[in-house]
Length: 424
Image (cartoon, rainbow, N blue to C red; front, side):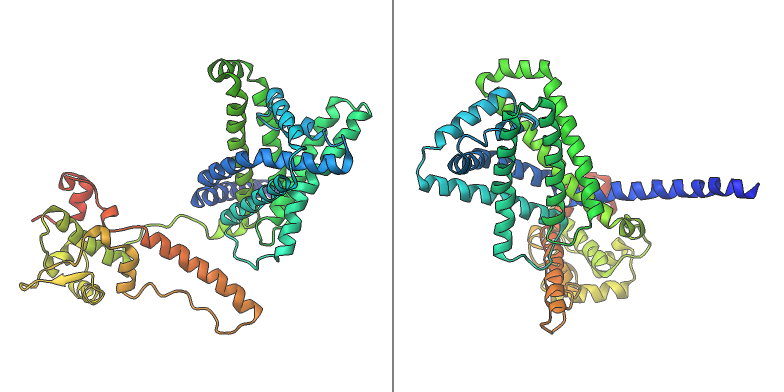
């Protein structure tokens, strides 16, 4: 009896574990994407990709025509399976690219450099989202990756598609080829672009989900006949471009969400164990208390530039007078506070000119993470990692002033200010 019940008990324990794991991955993905301003990165990447699409296709067409003659035109059939790339858009793009085959060698070089620049922009965006600070690749290796992804890969796919067209392959083969192409390319990019070691499993899972989402996105655009018709009436000949712009924005967003997903899957144990929201505690750190003291004085400065006594400051922040006195001494030594003849205190300058980083420096909590003095490989890598962490923390603190933490005009009428400022 017990032997039969054992699998059920194991399954009962595994289900909560699976739910907890899925929740950790989901939260980790969203947090990583939002903390890195993923939507802004996706918008800038979409804009860059849109501007470089024509040079990229023209470059592939030029090189394909030079080496393979008329072969390679099947690349445009594959482009049809991109979300938003309708028949009119691809036809116009093909017409422009065919005309570009008569351009000079200088224009061809320009197209090539512009296409390679697109890859480097994608690489830097992925590394910013992943937070990579590892050993950078050699320039020759980066150039090889860029050529394989942006030039050689599209040429090979264009030639292969042309051969399939000449053999009379049905349209379903191109759908399968397009899906396999997107999946394989995403796996390769998720493994190689972050500049850090990425395991196969996170890259494959993220690529599978993103490629499936891209397929659904393409089907959705194809079936939105009514919406496309209304856009055509509104924008006229520009409707194809408008649709493609919207699709590119969605594609880049999905692509970068896949980067965050791969990151969350790889570090899922860390997200489950450590990456939890900070809980409020009864005691605040020195930077918290010092900031609260300065916020009281910042409110007084904004109202009538009034001063506050040390005793009133201690009462306002609900901390012992000795602790407040030590922090006030450090803030005065750091040039953030000045004492009046009557012993009252005031800010030394406008609240918008005092950042939280200046506060942390004044109280001695801005010391950067120590790095080893050696010059071996481990010391060099850790130095880059710690230096980036220090820059990130400093940038956040330097980007926030005391004035940013205060309400607007008439702040004494708000509950927030009543909890912040002492009653006179």
